Image (cartoon, rainbow, N blue to C red; front, side, top):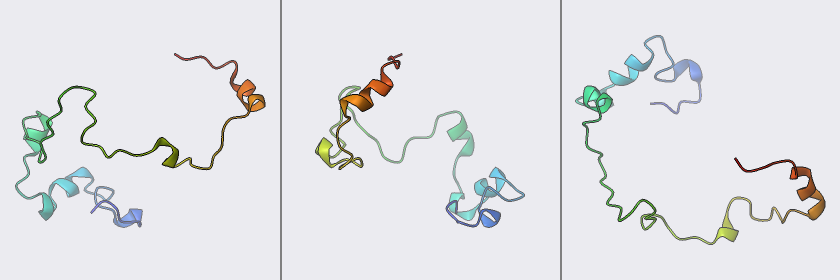
Length: 87
């Protein structure tokens, strides 16, 4: 639907714009007005115990992230950021 590499054929990027998406058979029966006024229930209900409840996420080692092997910032590199301050 939306992940067609050729932008000239991508649904929503054609002459009909977003209407092409809304009228696609896959969305037949979808309550677009309900989505707009936020009355549509989510298809998957998440029950969090608190705002910071991360129990629905997998545990992983921080050292295994996408920057693995990037190395530590050397002191001379850190000096380049001396003028940066947290907002």
